[in-house]
Image (cartoon, rainbow over the protein chains, first blue to last red):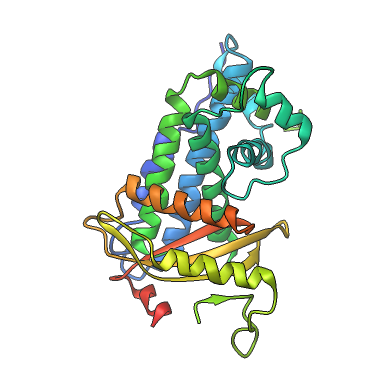
Length: 187
Length: 111
């Protein structure tokens, strides 16, 4: 059975983010540069935690190497799209514009719409970190002080924990819908 | 002035749209926000865009110093949740937070 030699581990990414964001930067290092990398790395911990759950949800009995390869097909925007639906339905966070068929789908056949706390925490945490990661990687004016950077890392740690621990029906649906956004890609 | 449109070369444009007024109301709400161990000292907000050209509201908050390396997660979540709710109520876009402690060098942004 083929095995991945160097699997991408969210816990290791979070540890790397901590190393990149000490209270005092290395001699001669740019504090903002290192903190930008820390925030980006923390985001990737969340991204890979989610892609791992997506693959495990869709292919629960597949070999690790199969799941690791199909995880490459899951794009950032696949997760962002579904996360926006969740936040839009939940009513905060600028997730307006949920298509009516998605609203009806997630509202279910019976009763009022209810999205559980784990799903909301994952969706909101992903969207916040995704936005900060884009600023970290591309925006020259963005501010990355120590306490703020540590806040992003702490949030990423929380989201990773929820992603890996949650077993609610709604989080399963969340991961499944992300899979349905993803496309088979040539890599 | 702490609520601004996109800055222009010579400073900040006046509030001339309902959206600007909403941003101003948001900033006033943020400045008054406080919970155990976490207070907003100052706030700035401006409408911006993400890399896809979608609207985002960039919010910079000057916060009371945390006891440790960062603020308590529950309190920080509570703060962001309250401000996200207010932004939604005012019809403002997705909020991107920059949290700055009083002790940090970037606190001078608010001077």
